[in-house]
Image (cartoon, rainbow, N blue to C red; front, side):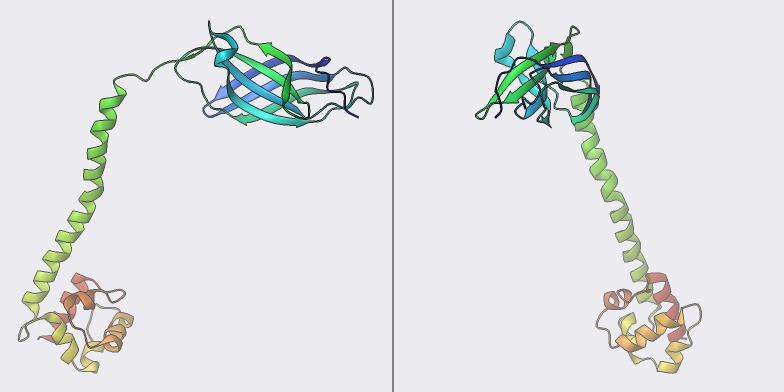
Length: 229
């Protein structure tokens, strides 16, 4: 039977290193100094922050992990834990590692290791606000530029194609009415593309022709120039 006595559950030689959203916790020794066979409850390790000058009322858990149970007269040595780190709000904080034990209802504090150096969280600089405001419209403009350029290019090419379609109101009609052998002999256009044009006729718009796989405005211009000689 577990004896939920928080005494003799200790942590020694504690340290931590914060790297972005991770914290590396190091502990030289975690001990259960109770009698042999006295199994602890589930142990929990937490990195906590206490707002300086206020005390436990402002306790915030920054990182946490479950260690499991530990037999009496046993210990863990040279422990390292890589945990997700949730930074506290702006202010000056004292950090501490806390070892707690599950007593069947809640976790009871067993031991704490406080760190002397305060952990400072500063407010974001005011200079960062206008930078974000400036970058957003520039990014939107940059993202829209390629689309606008492409649209203009297609529109321009399409107009040129219409000019090349002599004798027909639209270029796609020339492709619809062309003889198969003449269409398949157009130079400068892959044969597979020409075969797809033959297979997918009739077309009802130049846009439908341009939607054929491998087809583009320049290639369509070559085809119409050949068909309308």
